[in-house]
Structure formats: C-alpha cells, structure tokens
Image (cartoon, rainbow, N blue to C red; front, side, top):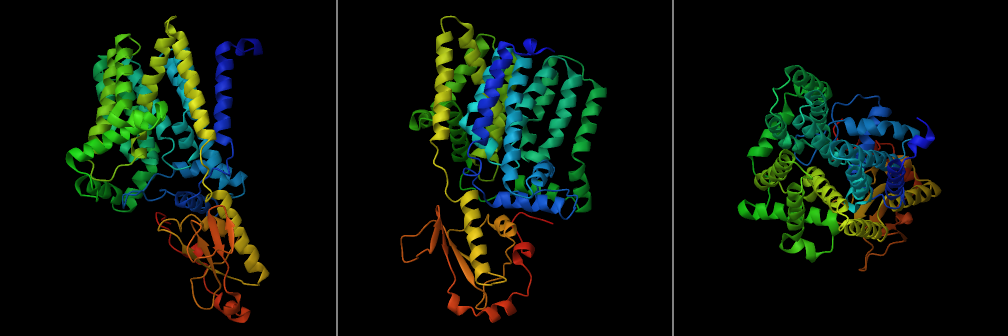
Length: 496
C-alpha cells in the first residue's frame, strides 16, 4: 500500500485520536502513579517469574478468600519489567500500552460492526473518556475488562450474523480469558446461547468444539492448579455465591445501591456534573432515551438491542443478589453498553444535516470536559514519586550512620502502611522487626497537625528519623544478622 492511499481522511483522523490517547495515558506517568498494595503484589509475582524462574499458575488472591486471579496479566508485565530493569514503573507502562489497544479495539470493532464513522466516534470516546483513561493508567489485573467487553459484543454480533466460525473462535478466546481478568464476566456468557437462537442458524458443532478447545488451552493454568489443590477455587466460588459476605445492603436496598452505582458510572462516562446526573438517576434516563432512539432509527437492530438490554439487566440483577459488597469497578463489564449506545447516538445525530452541528458540538464538549477533568485532576502526593524519594532518604540516612538494617513503623490508618515493599527492595534495604536494638524510621501519612512532628516531608508523606542515641552501632550490627523480613515476610494476597 502506498503512503498516499494510506493517508486517507479516516486514517488521519484515527492517527490523531491515537496520538491524543497516547498523551492522556503517558503524560506525567510517574507523578500520577498512585502506587499501592496491588502494585507491590504485581511486582512480587513478576519478580518470582523473572528472578526465581518460577512458572506460576496463579496471580494474586482476590478479595474473595480462596479465589485467585489468573497469571496472564503478570506474564504480560514480564517483558517491560525486564526492559526497565525491575523498576515498577513498568506496570503502568504496560497497562497504558494495553489501553492503546483499547482505542484500536473500539475503532476496529465499531467500524466492522457498524461503519467507519461509528468506529471513529467510539475510538475517540474511548481515547478521551476520563473513566477509560484512569482505568488504563491504573495498572491492575482487571484493567482489560473494558476491552474484553467490547470484543464480547463483537463476537455476539458475529454470531447474530451467522458467522459462527469467527464468532465461536473469538468466544473461545474471551471465555478462556475470564479467569485471568474477572470471574464476574461469566454472568454474560448465556448471551452467546441467545445470540445463536436469534441468528436462526443451526449451531456449528465443529466450531463449537474449536471454541471449547481454545477455552481449555487458555484455562490450562486454572485446571492444573485446581487438580493439584483439590479444586479449592471452585469450592470458594460456590461458597461466595451461597454464603453471606458482610454486605450491609440487602434486598431492595441492595438493588437501589447497584442501580445507583450503574448510574454513577454512566454519569462519569457521559458528563459528570454532580447531582444533575446522579440525582433521580438522570444518567440512566438519558442513556435509555438514546438507546430507544437508536432502535427507532435502526442504528441498532432488534437483536442487537435485545442482547444489549439483557446484558444490562443481567449485571443489575446479579449484583443485586450477590452477597458481597459491590463497588464501581465490579460493573466495568457494562462499559461496552455505554460506548455502543452513545457512539451510535452521536452517529445518528451526525447523519442528519440538521443535527450535525449538535453532534459535533457534543463531541467537542465531551473532549473539552474530559481533557479539563484529566488535566485539572488533583494529583495524589503519596504515590510512586513520593514513596521512592522517602525510601531513598531512609537508605541514604541509614548508610551514613552505618546501619546494616533498619525497622519501619507507620503512623497512618490501616491499609496505608502497604505499598512500600518494592521501594525497600529497590533500595536493597534490610528490614528487621521493630526492637530496642534496631533503628526505627517512622513513615507518617497524612502529615499531622497534632503533637507528631515529622523530620522531613515528601509530598503528603512524612519521615521521622530514629533517635540515634538509643542505637549504638555495635548493638545494631549484632541485631542485624537475621532474615530480611521485606523479602521473607508474608504479603496479603500473595502466594508462592
């Protein structure tokens, strides 16, 4: 293909969208990286794979005891960890690169399913959306769920159109990825059966078997792990569905809670202007109106509309009866629904000469709002940059004083004492348990206004140096002969 043929208007627009997406995902990468416990877990697992040469079958333990996430996310991290010489910034670089694939996914899937205009709109919405950008920069194993949901819609549409060969091949891949991303995605798989029924085509047994084989291949780590460990995850999954898990919401109040969270996610995606969209479930009303207009104007056919509607209902009902406390990220699998409805609605407006200016105005306002929200976002001052500087100072001070090991204490709320182990590892700090013979450095978060006085501040983090007089160097050296608990101590969610 010649350069002239490649540089079409459509391709140039998409290149511009991609460049905008690159900027939003890589701008101030270190400064905006809110490094926490999940990132420590990812580093420790990748370190286990790379340095210990341990072929892992599982990733971290999820918030549901006994259930682990699959290892795929961590293996994806391996190349960049190697390139960045085990610097944990590789996590957010990998995640952001996957996010760029999400922009391409949105453009390609919608171009194939509908038309190039819808593809460009969908790609643009994904590239600029504040919720998508933050998701892509978060660097957690569930980050690709949004991308999964878009490909799942494409596979359903393929089956609706009778293209079972491609459809079942893709469904096989997506189903095999569920354990590696989020087990909650299982709840929408019945839509595949409905898509076959709506297509009015006889099921292709050959490609169904191919799909099943793909599932088995991608689920091999899960199958091997379960066989070796007496099917502990299956048992834990059944328990999670049948046992109370401490949620304060039940019955109708739980339904309203989930409905509110869905409305909140939609409002963030469309235009988060506070009470205007979140009160009285206005965001859901607006999306529903756009959905109905899409059906009425044939922007979505009846079968597509039915699958999208049931997709929404399945999520709403399942999490309304699920006994676990539900948060916004549990509902990420609905993102494709919002993207489909909004992109097709904007395409509908653009097709009308009378409404074209309105469509363009909405797209411009959407981009300006999301850009302003991203650029004006308050950057946390207790993240990667501040933690690295603080731990580097501990290393520098302890070296100057000749301490072969140190102990760390925290003045903070539960949970905020996590997310430091990578930095201790990077600085090669030998940590001992707190005792009278080991110098104690105290990390404070947030900076205090009471009688606690930090010696040095790093953003919102404070550091209190040890009382050097209490730690004679000879005594310290005698006490530093034990194990380095930063390397050997247990880590919540990590299993060797």
